[in-house]
Amino acid sequence: SELPLHSDNTIFGNGQFNVTIDILNGKLLIKSTGTVNNGKDSSGNQKYITDTVTVVLNNNILLTITTAVFGKTSISLSGGANVHGDIGTNSITASSIVYDNNNLIYGNIIIPYNASDTVVKKPADWITPANIVNSPNVVVGNYPAPIMPSFPTNLTNRGSISISGNGSNTISDDGYYDKITIDSNTTLTINTSTGDKTIRVKNLDMTQGKIIITGGNKVNLYVDSCTNMKGYVNSDGSSNGDKNKLQIYCNNSNPFTLGGETHIYGSVTWGTGDLTITGSGAITGNLISAGTSVKLNGGSLVDSQILYAPNAIINVTQGAQIKGAVIGNIIYMDGGASITLPSTLPTIPVSKIGRASCRER
Image (tube, rainbow, N blue to C red; front, side, top):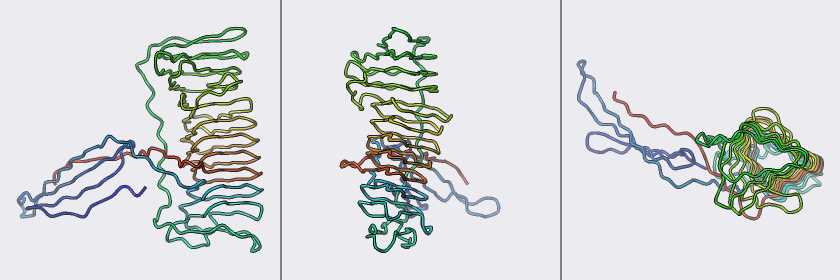
């Protein structure tokens, strides 16, 4: 969480070098820059040659999340909202964290090491406030913006699928589909008996139905745009699928609502569009959003390890529940909403672009 790291300049021979360790696409990038004397120019000024060499280590860098709620800018709790676990912020502004007498925080409030207690607006004196702890670091959490992975472009074009009435359909191979329509409570089955499946859909229009995964292997589902999603995904409605067997990448840029009667058993990576989960809508798996707004209300549920949307305003209201850590920019909790840090601390790959250069001066 403290990368990048920089070494001091180290003298060698007639030059010097320094080393920087950073992160590139979730991997360690080691960059060594050396400068040596190269005589003088026609005006008698010293010339130098500078060269940079980089090495990328192939192991993924996972950032462990230790707070139940993290708001980079602010956190506001009201209306009986409760948090089971620590909460934290990077802000040093007064009243960045606000909670009242009806809220319960079962943990500490973590603030930057150079912040004062005024960052937290405490409830009335007769309520025992949560313990405020200064982090040893300037930054409490270093949470980069999520990056949507590149969608596969080498899949066989398999046209479109439309299921309605008493119809059904089965996908048994990788493929690209212009459109998949699931209507009238029909079922699309993805058979993974021969191995993991990669499926890309330009437009998914699931007005009412089910997507069932059989065969015991994993499905990576890439959706360029989702018009509707109502029903069960990785479930037949009577038994729940294994959330580890489904990863959905949905690159929506427009606002989208995941309503009641919709249950997704798998992890979801969402695009830049606003996302609302309402009613009895539920995601059993991780939720990652690159957008600026995520709303959960009306008894909705995210049962995961993490809701990760570091650029977003996250509203958790009207009895919504999150069983997992929540990372956002601004977080509002109200109406009996609850967030519970899981017993197994969540991790997420860190992704930040690094750049190396080679130049002579």
